[in-house]
Amino acid sequence: MYRSAVFLTFASLVLGQQVGTYTTERHPSMPIQVCTARGQCKRESTEVVLDANWRWTHITNGYTNCYTGSEWNATACPDGATCAKNCAIDGADYSGTYGITTPSSGALRLQFVKKNDNGQNVGSRVYLMASSDKYKMFNLLNKEFTFDVDVSKLPCGLNGAVYFSEMLEDGGLKSFSGNKAGAKYGTGYCDSQCPQDIKFINGEANVDGWGGADGNSGTGKYGICCAEMDIWEANSDATAYTPHVCTVNEQTRCEGADCGAGSDRYNSLCDKDGCDFNSYRLGNREFYGPGKTVDTTKPFTIVTQFVTDDGTDSGNLKSIHRYYVQNGRVIPNSVTEVAGVDQTNFISDGFCEQQKSAFGDNNYYGQLGGMKAMGQSLKKMVLVLSIWDDHAVNMNWLDSVFPNDADPEQPGVARGRCDPADGVPATIEAAHPDAYVIYSNIKFGAINSTFTGN
Image (cartoon, rainbow, N blue to C red; front, side, top):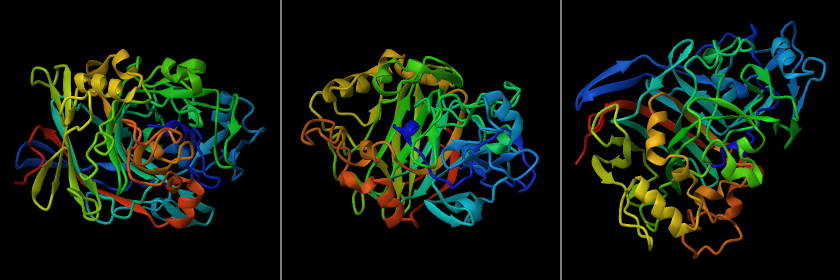
């Protein structure tokens, strides 16, 4: 929900747009299954690629960094276009530098902090690839998306996130002449937070107005917006799934109020808040967590269904449903227990309107088109898998009291049982460097085709 203001540290490894040759890029394999009916699934040989924002960037004819700490190399990067010509990104050592491994076929393990020769890497973000140079594109309408997760080693303050963003299939390679790297090197990220910490946008460096935030990253004049469907934002104590809509229907560079920073949050091109379904926030505090109905000390399966009004792949999005499967048992999503919200366990326009009213929140989601608008974006989505900590608000919006100065007894304020201080990045990076999340067994297909259970 607040991803745009998050600064993930990665020593001096950063983004560029030319292609370097010092490290060969080898995408880890992560096959998925596509299902037409229950028990009728076909394996696809997909792989993952590391986001370009994590990669080492250097001048094209040497080892000199184009970006160090939180500052651009003024000689190589006097302006955005020149910087894109002068700087190259290299291939990634996925396991050695970033702690990204594939413990088994179809499984992906993301380590929180990885010590390496350059210092340490914190967090990571990868995208699912259909081939070596194109992202896998999903049309989620009238379909379901299913995967297994192990969050048992993911404490308060961290976020193991699985979501879809309306990115370009080739990462912007054809659309922007300054981008020579494309999807093969993880370029072209965008989301509903219109992040301004992306170092290259539309093939140009985001150097104009760049300011260092914490010694490892910063923000520039421009942001990059697109619709986003958060399938899974979670740790072992809290979880939410959240659609976010935009007024634009593909990645769009923003500046000023369009990016929605600060007081312009509800003037943005995108709905940053989204319409979240967090069981704890919605009144059921015994549904999700260690030893609870969905027991996070053990792996489980998450099923998300995108139901259309006419039951076809071209219909309007009507509702988004959630199920869990654990120990062979299908567990329906929790039912809301909030005054002013009808008892329900799925997301719809009616739910969003009632929830926003009950919590005193701005229904920007509805203003920007709600479920119908979300459905239009769901026709062309890229899958994102990540682990991160929150330098903006310490992940309190997910698992603690938010806003921090609000009364936790007021509706919607308590999001989880975590202490607000648990997510302070310096604290959690020191206390839990070995935290990790494992995603596995991804399936996609017709509704009720990707899972079994009682």
